[in-house]
Image (cartoon, rainbow, N blue to C red; front, side, top):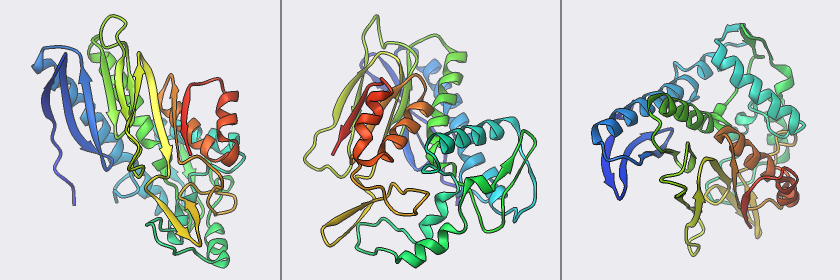
Length: 298
């Protein structure tokens, strides 16, 4: 059932904040300006774009492009330029990670449910699911995609970050005022809040009960966090992260619990955080080699 979609405007110390729900997350648009009508119009434009992307790419939406592809059973499905570019980005991530990041790996949820229990699947069960994975089996070009039967794709690893970047494009087309877009912790800002005054961003780490939110100063750019603080399994004192290696079907070992990355665009920050987690014990070294700013919690 479609949840009610609306936006709510509140006043902040130096402007306004527009709140809405999308992609199963609380979302905000902060604008450093006293014009409430302008802020509300901007918030509605951003929310409309985020909801458009959610409707188009969510695997939970039966009419989404993602669902149509997943139900195609080996038949060619026509795609538009936006979908082609997203698939192309997913392909780049697959190549860079040497197959560890794979948008066909969502079927692993058939055997892995990260609910905090000790329900570890059998080796045979994981192998059976892996048979229906493998981005290299999918063919696509600018006009169409062909995916083998019993396989599916999931844009969950890049969709929200893409929506942040699209929202910032909408905001920059509408106004030259300082704006920050925050979709459930993945966020971007177009410029400092005031003259060289940064946005103060609280980074929460759900699951770390005793750890206070980390406050990050962000002048401009994007920030994304990836981690397994809430979703994991625990058996015989071994903690199993929900970050899965698509090549093996098993959780990445020795990875940080949470990684936050800053990059020019949110989709870059998000994939760097995810790829770093997939390096396991070498996560921090991987990010240091990229010469980007990051925070890791183990």
